[in-house]
Amino acid sequence: MPDPLDGLPSRADLLLRAGARRSGDHPALVLGGRTVTYAELDEAVDRCAALLRERFGAAGAVVAIGADLHPDVVIAYHGALRSGNLALPVVPLLREQQLQYVLEKSGARAALVGAELYARLRRIRGGLPGLELVAVLGEGPVEDDRQAPRFADLLDAAGPGVPEHRAAPDDPAALHFTSGTTGMPKAVVLSHRNVTVNAVQTARAHSLDRTSVTLVHFPSYHPMHMNSALAAGATQVLVPAPDPAEAIERARAHAASHVYLLPARLAQLAAHPRLSELRLPDARMIASGGSALAPALADTLSGHFGIPVVQGYGLAETSPLTHFDQPGDHSPGSVGTPVEGTEHRVVSLDDGAVLPPGENGEIQLRGPQVMRGYLDGEHGPAVDADGWLATGDVGRIDPDGRLHLTDRIKDVFKCDNWLVSPTEIEAALAEDPAVADSVVLDRPHPVSGAVAHALLVLTDPGSPGEAERIIGRLNARLPYYKQVRGHEVVARLPRTPNGKIPRRELRASFHARLDGGSPIVILINEFILTSAPEEFEKVFEASSVYMRTQPGFIDHTLVRSLTNPNVYTNIARWEDAAAHLQVVQSEGFQEHIRELTSVAKATPQLHTVVSHVERG
Image (cartoon, rainbow, N blue to C red):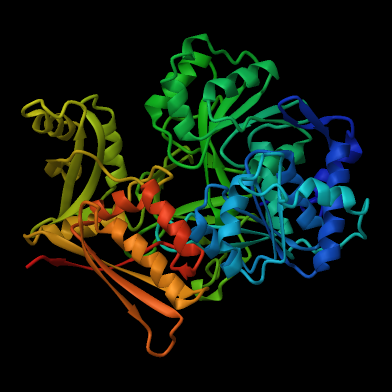
């Protein structure tokens, strides 16, 4: 298979340099009334590289970058690469503990962040002794800190350029953390080759060129959209405001050819009261990414705007894009065919044998965008001996070579040896107007191994017999092994801050409840002090007073290590997982967490589920 990197720059930052030399006066970025040309952007990246080289040399220091959509993000990212150091994109929505985990695990020596993330970073700065440089990206005001160091001021004081750092294509360029949906987030190491080749793969898959205008409407800047547009010499219009209708208006004003939104914002757009008046006369497609997009939602928006709404697939481990559903040759429900230079296959979950088209199994990928490996060697090798990356996702390849995603391996189960995806059943339930929300779990069965059990949130909870009618309509559409054999109606389902259902916790709680009684969830937190013990105990007691007033809380025990007096462990008991999750996602709890992070470092996931026991 031909190498997509043939003839391309050896370093990722040279994609921008090439664009500046081809068309220096061409607009690269547009934010509100501000336009940055390719030449201006390249010159700013030179200054950033000079700043970072002066501070850290060219020895691969990790530079964390996290902010809303803003030109400074591009400058910081490519400045880190050009200086001979590593860029680490950070989601600006991270809370204090998550942020501390990412910065510690990566060994970050610099953090260039937006105003909101800077305010959180200040609270944990004492626990990050390796962090040498912190500055605020963009122009937003910083809460209670008028003297916050500004990235723009540092650039103004920096020199105009830096001696070229001649990185080899396979040298490290960037770090990315996985989403952590099946465990703690892992740091992925990407090479210059990975970043460069995937920028070109994405640009070609999306049919981007110098005439393209891409509109990006995300909560933060993803390197995939940033780098693919730079590789093509396209213009990027940035819309950080959360209203999708405003983004569509900006897209029309700038004659955008490509519009990028998350599924959650596409859902908001489909239900927006102004949808009927919105138009995209110059757009060739709307692209969705980040999570699955419901086919019905795609059909609604495609029908309104008269252009395809398509999606792709990728992972942090693959730089990220591996598949894209081409406009004009797209299939609803599919994430498309592999991008240039990429191979895919599906293997059996039982014995690893390669499966024929149409059969569900684990998705494996091979291509030049696959990572160098994980930063932490304990996570094992990146690929097998033949170069295949195991994704942990379940899916199938149809006869036309398109990939269809099913679920995560840890979520699927077998009924009579048939593979069952809870997500597929939930998607079918979502089509019923009587269902407001649902989650499907596996219920052990003495003959079939496991069967589907649904937790339902009803649109009209007061309607007698509605749940039974819903399940009847659903099962009439499904093969027997996917049919829901048990169900219960609940008032609500807990969700994480990014909108996902915490399936692992709900499943554990559900399985414990099947044995009868009321299950207790036992949770453990470890705290490593960054202040005096009496200060920590004072702050922790205030948090405990709050927790004791919350529904579902039973009791807790705080113990201090005999071998290390700076380590405390808290053991808490809750009625069930749902009660605990509802509380820890509340703003009141987050206020106490902010106080705790000022006096101690805590485990980044807030708790570890140890076991479920029946209450005696």
